[in-house]
Every structure is written in C-alpha cells, then in structure tokens.
Image (cartoon, rainbow, N blue to C red; front, side):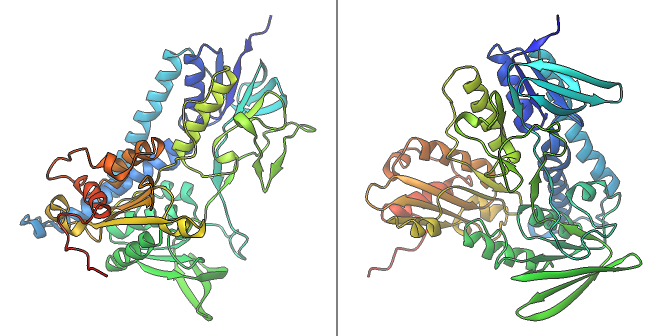
Length: 468
C-alpha cells in the first residue's frame, strides 16, 4: 500500500522548512519537496548571502577608515573570490543545518519539482523520472522570484537580478541599480563599501518609500557621503545596449538623463513563484499573480494551504516562517501561537534600520492621536565610541493611554534591538511600564530608554524641551 503523508510541504525555504519541522514536532507524518537547495532563496540567494557580503564589505571599509580610532593599516585590499567563498561557506553551513533538522525530526525530503495534481496528490519530477505522492494536506511555500518590470530593453542579455549578482565572480568598477527598496540599498551598501561607483534610480519620491521618511532622508545623506549617486522620482524609459555597455534612459524632474554602465542590476521587487505548480485543469483563486488565502491560510481548494511570498502581504523570511507555524498549528487542530499582525522590518545598511508597529505618518493617516519620543544617537556613549552616523530611535505611543504603538530605529544593532518592541507592543505595555527596566551602560540599547524618557518629560542626555 502506498505511503500517505499527513502533510506535503512544497518548498524548503524559511516558510517551508520551518513548517515541515513544526508539523513533524506536532506528530504529523510530513514530507517536503524542493527542486533546489534547502533553505530556499533566503539562505542561498537572499538574506544570508547578502548580509555576509555586507559584513565583509563593511569590515573592509572600516579597516580603511581605522585612523579615526588611531589604528593605521597600509595596503588594505580585498579578495572578492575570498568574500564569495566566505558567503558560500555561511550559506552551506545553514543549509546543512536544515538538512540535519529534517533527519532529526523525521521529515522526508523529496528532491524535485512539485506539481499539484489534486488536493491530496502531488507529482514530483526529477532526473530519475516522475513519482506521485499521496497526502491529506498540501502546504504551498514556493516563495518568490526576481521581478523584471515591463521596461523596453529589460529583456537584454546581461541585465542582472539579485540571483545573477551573487554569481558575479568579480567586483564591478561601476554599478547602476534600478530600484531603491531594500534589495537596492543593501547591494548599494556592499559595492560602494568595496569602492564601486554606484548609481541608484528609484521611481518613487524617496528611498525605502514604504518605511518611515526619516529613514529615507538619513540614508540618502549617508549613501551620498559614501559616493552613491541617487536619483529619486526618476522613471526609467528604456534600456539599450552597445557592445558590453548598457545605457539607462530615465526622466527626472522632466529632464531626460542617460547613464552608461557595464553592470546593471534590476532590484524592483519579487513576484510569486507559481510556475507549473498546478496540473492542467487544477487551480486556486489568485489575484495579481498571488494565491488568495482565507482563515488559517486555506486556499480555495480544500486541504490546500499557502504561506509566504506566494500570497499577498509582506515578503519577509520571518513572516513566512511565522505564517508556516500558524498554518501547521491550524492543520493540527491547534490555535495559532504567533500574532501575525506585529511584524518587524529590517534593512541591513550601515547604520542598520528597523521598524515595527505603526509610524507617526501612518498614525496621522488613521486619525490616531499619538505622541512621539525621539532620541538622537549622537548623544549615546556607545555610538560615540564606534563613531556611528546619523542614528536615532523613535517611539510612537497613544497620546492618552501611553500604550506603545510602534518604533523606528536607525542605529547600530537596530535589527537586534527591535525584537524588544514586539514584546512591548504585543503586551500593550505603556511608557511607564518600560521605564521600570534598567538598561546597561554603555550600550546602544540605552538609546531606547532615552527615547522613552523623552515621552515622560525629557531624556537625561538631551537639552530640555522648550516651553510653549
């Protein structure tokens, strides 16, 4: 008799592998199907390799600038192939860890390309042929792929997405990036630190347009200081190619501008990956290329669920993981253990950027009455020691109750510190609740306390507020 799984997960990225392991821990007989490496885009072509390269590039830049701290180094150079080896080593270590977790938890890993035949059967194609697997439930976690905008010339050979960028075996002397979102500014951080002449072309009025405008303003100043040429409110009209050189034609303030480059990166976002996912005659409800889900991540097909980048919503690895846990808990008949409404967003520039909850701008749009406590990290001892640039911590609270609604941070270790605010917001803590906790000195985290103190009459390490 053929083996029947309780759950087949399609995709082994952060959403898929976490779902599979959680399902196994809950006692479900589970398989995961993956046509590429374990860990998906995040571990292999996204989050992890990008952050590894950022770390290496920032270390190089900081070493060159060591004289600020009285440390002098001569003939500082980098070996790009070694950076790539370090990047791959990091990804490989995490990939191997995921594989070991599958084995330790009894998850069956099936190598190949999955196609849903019915709501309880999955066809898997690989180099050995085809096999059909039976299951009680299917969870789609196929993630996303780089999106190429409909710009004339975007089909030209040699234009890179983030996938091809990681395959480049040398650092470019110059790089034009179309897109000033998270992917664009993180690659700009890497290659500008390595001495590459970087140009960013962004159609929206500012960088990181979906985040707090203070982030955009400060990041633009920092990147410009590091030699990045930034064009916002710039609409790309066409791309042409002469030999190995691309020419990007865009309009900015009603003027036509042409930029030439040998290396061109399209970083305008990602699209849901549903290619050949459904057999002929089989489908689920979709909207603009994304799978529509309802309560507990159910699709329009019974016993079929979907999570992560393949559905509508924020495209973040930790969101996919959290959704996967909640979806699997629902399949197992349990209530979800994670509040999916409180999502931290992080950008790994230097300084780091992190945000959670609502911003001051969003509060005004919703008609909420809020107060904002803001502390400039130029007055923070640890930031002065490490000579951080243009950092701040901003906290948004309800004006009447003083309950914390959101936080935005641009400073060293922001991506690590933002987690505290998830706990604060989830538990509806007030300013006075948070201020009961003592913070160690000297730490970047002291800035959090100072921002809260600013809401309670004034932070210790800033000038007193002017009386109105």
